[in-house]
Each structure stands twice: as C-alpha cells, then as structure tokens.
Image 1 (cartoon, helix red, strand yellow):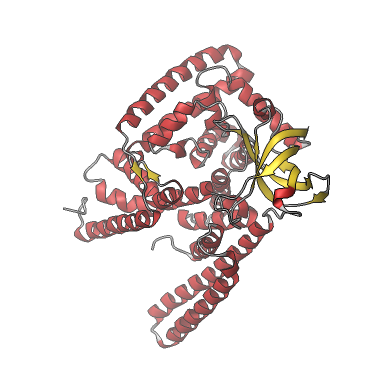
Image 2 (spheres, helix red, strand yellow):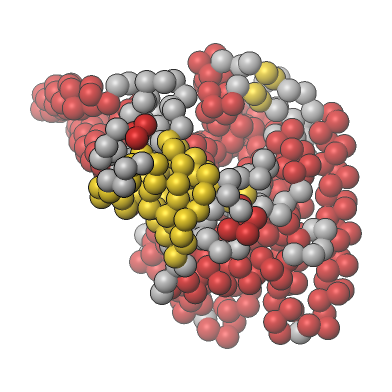
Length: 501
C-alpha cells in the first residue's frame, strides 16, 4: 500500500493494543498476556521471513526484509501501546477510602469547565484529597469528572483550567454498576466550599480567553464565533448544535485541523513576505502553539499541531513528506504525551477521519471523477472517506448515523471557515481599528443568518439511521472501502476515467 511504512506499522500496533483495552473491548488483566503472546507470534514470523530471505532471490529478499522491518515496528508499537495503557491506568482515580463515604474533595481542573444544557457545569480535574462525613481527610490522586450544580453560571466566569475547587457532594454510581475500570468516575458537587483562581501562566491564559469570549458576547452570532475560534460552546445556540448534529456535520464545530489550517494560512499570508519563508514558518508555529494552548490542548487540535511541526521539520530538512507516516508519527507522539486524552472519542474520531480521507479519498475520487465535476467529486470523496472510517465509531457510541453529512459536510465546513475568518477580522479590528467593527459585524450577522437557514433546510431533508450496530456498520465500511479500492484498480487496468462502466 502506498505510504505504508514502519511508522504506520508502529502506530497500528500501538492503536490496536491501546484501544482494545482502554475501550473495554478486552479485560485490562489480559493486557500483559496478549502483549507477550503477540511478541511470540511476531518473533515466529520474523524467523520465518529471515529463513525465506536466505533461500530467496535478491528481489524477493528485499520484500522479506521489508516485512521484517514492519513486524519489528509493529512489536515496538504494541510495546508503546502497553506503556501508554499503563500510564493511563496510573492516572485513574484511586479512592483512599470507601467511595460511598466520600463527601468532600479538593480537585484541580485540568480543562475549562463547560456549561451543560441543563445548567450544570462539567469539567475534569485531578483529585488532591478526599474527606468523609466525620472529617477524616486522606490525600489522593487520579482524574475524575466533576459535575457542579451550585451557582454554575457565576462559577463559569471564575473557574477555568488550573483552578482548584473544594466541593461537597458524592460520587455517582457507574453506569454498569460494577465500577468499570476503564471509565472515569463522576463526582456530583452540590456545593462549592472554596475556589482558588489559576496562577501564573494559566491565570494569564484564563483571563485572555475570558476577554475574547466577552468581546464576542452580545451579537446573535457571537456564540457561534466563540465555538469556532476557542471551542467555547456555552453561548452557542442549542438549535445550531442540534442542526449540526442532524446534518451529520458536528465535526465542523469541533476544533480540528480545519481551524488550525485557517489560522496557519492567515499567518503565512501576513508574515511570509516581511519575514521570509523559514522565519515566518517558525513564528507561525509559535503562534499556533499559543493558540492551541489558549483553546485547550484538545486531542484533534494537538494532532494538527504535532503534524504541522513534523511536516515543517521535514520540509526544511529536505525529507519527502507522505501523509500516512506523518499521521502515524503524530499518533505515537500524542499517545506517549497524553494517553488519557487519546482514549477519548474525539481523539479516535480525529485520527480515524483523517486516515480515512488519506486512504480512501483517492480511490473514491478515481471512481467518481468521470461522473461529477472535479471540485464536487473531490469534496464528495473527502466526505465519504471520512464518513466510511468514522461510521463504526459513531454507531458504537451513539447508535445513530446521518448519511446526509457525506453530501453537505464540505459545504458547511466552507461556510464555517469563511465565518471563522470574519470572526478573526472582527476581533482584530476591535483592538486595532474599532470603527471597522460594525461593518464586519454586519457581514457576520448576514452570513450567520444564511448559515442557519441553510442548516434548517438541510436538516429537513436529513434521514436518521437509528439503532445501528457498530459491528455491522464496520463490516459495511470495510466492504465499501474494498469496493472503491477495487473500482480504482479496475479503472486503472482499463485505463478509463469511470471504473464501473
């Protein structure tokens, strides 16, 4: 397969082992046994290929050596996966006393708390100590979900990443009632006893983020702009969220490579001429790092930043770049740095979608480009590639699919990108040229109304596939991918534009 390399093999091994156990498909206790059994089987195959290498012709020897390298890389990958799984389990909350007796905890937020539709505040944090009803206090560790119902609206303006909270409440029972080792426990806080603000650079980040959100509050479109620029969805109209979900385009709202790419393109446009290619590239990298830190190191944004860094280094070192190995290296780096974040659905969807686009969009484009205009065919191929790769995950977690997203995802993404550029111009003018703000705001208001009307129309045409099974969906995705790969092959052998004539 074009682009397949030891880096991809390493990432495949790491993903296979890590997600098999972190996702609960296999019991955690089996992880070491599966690891050593896999190593044993890999060693047998390496020995077989080495034996064949000695007897084979020179051309076949190169093939066998290539497979040996892939197997060694795969072994390295499952080792990385096991290490990441270990560190993820180490970060799991370990109750120092019976969970049902815990009434008070002190927790430090590791992300920005967000306001839920029902009015509660939700976030993740690292527990510092637990206390029971008798006042017995014991230090603790591990990550928990925090659900706060006390003064959520006021607290939203005060608590962010780096804040420390002392709260009273109780742990909610696990969904399956058995204390699933792979799940993160949730503490429902009924009262906030004390709040400590973030300190140092985290305080600067929190204040700057809050200032930008405040600038966008007021206009009808402000919540949408804050969601696209900063991932801040507290002010986003719930109708817009529901419409994006019904149109199968929720990924447009999630900060990802699209958003980072827009900012990178704007920086290149502004900086390249005065600074030159090399200096402007590294200045842009610094600005992008600050942006990702400001928005929060969400898995999809972090992936884009790591990939941008790797591709930039390859470009200036004169190393040919192939997207699939870059995706693999990015996955390995991110898995080692943040195994907890990589276990999230957003991380899995981010990597699955991009891999689907890279692997499947070329054969899909080859099959359909003779039947559709090239621009439309490219857009369709990208959307279908992402949908095919992510459908089993969406079906497994939500049980619902909206296939209309294949047709409209690119259009809604383009409109959101245009709106994001206008929002950046609006914020920039508010600090540099305030008289320009009303005109930019008027343009954004018109664009937002058009956007919502289009969303409503598309949602009215949407068909919901409910109660879909992830196994059947996965087999369907595999069959669809195989069909288009075969179609590409047939098209090339016949030397025709349309493969299914």
